[in-house]
Length: 319
Ligand code: HEM
Ligand SMILES: *[C@@H]1O[C@H](CO)[C@@H](O)[C@H](O)[C@H]1NC(C)=O
Image (spheres, protein in one colour):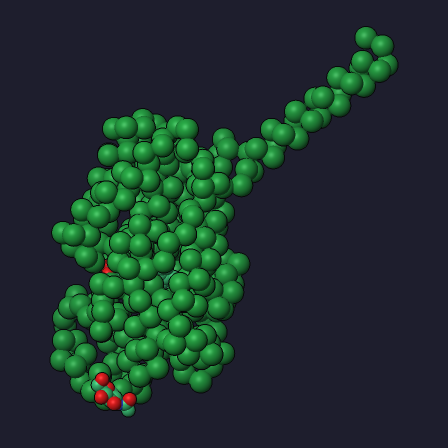
């Protein structure tokens, strides 16, 4: 080989290497499964529609599951892993224990996807898509979902215990926990709009309705289902008016001092987020736009791509 062909060989190798390296860090893309599983979207949507028709709260539970996945070492389906004698998952962390729902529904969607596209679609992507369908099916905005995540082989209960926000958090704590995931205070406030659907247990809102200043009528009605002692699992809707509809009712409730959680009401308490709460309470359109954009940002937190992770065969267990 002469000088120029040797040189040519090195240049080609370098280009090949760079392509390879950049592919393993590939950006997620909405068309990731366009060829390998063209029916993916319709399978996820149909299974979600059936589940929500049966139990409207399932939409909320799946949306929350996605949030709790993404905030703990990225959207990698780590939240779905079961504890085994030799493995500790995230299900028993403070925010998750006795609280997360939707695992059986995830099994269902995964089974339906596997029956048509074997060993192809990650649990992390299925959960991300299912969360979007939940919002759409309950009357909220839609958006394109970037795909191509792979599933973790690990989970971290300690990361779950430190990264997930508690309902007792003050505004500064919420802002800093979201900033740690590259989400702005505005993203955080828009994403909290997810509390326009779903329910919370007495254990999570007791201290708010006994210790904080809130609307007196509201406080009395919540105390009646959440006694000072006991009744921890009694539930109340996060948005009193339309708990099964994705709208801006949550922000209207905050302005009426009727946020259910302490962490809800601090968004409208004379602090930096008041202007966004006011905007979203007035404009469903502004909320839809900001919520959708923030969901894409949250869904992009540290995905495993390329040769990292795996496509789990069963969402509850590593292969
Ligand atoms: C800002 C910080 C947040 C805090 C402190 C927080 C806390 C909570 C708590 C304590 C519950 C009730 C859990 C229970 O009683 O078992 C809850 C429910 C829920 N959260 Fe959040 N959350 C936050 C942000 C988010 C975000 C960003 C999303 C999604 C984008 C979300 C979606 C939901 C949904 C949909 C429910 C109802 C779940 C159901 O009915 O099964 N939350 N949240
Ligand atoms: C408290 O809530 C009730 C019922 O929604 C409402 O009629 C009342 O005006 C509220 N009070 C305040 C001070 O916001």
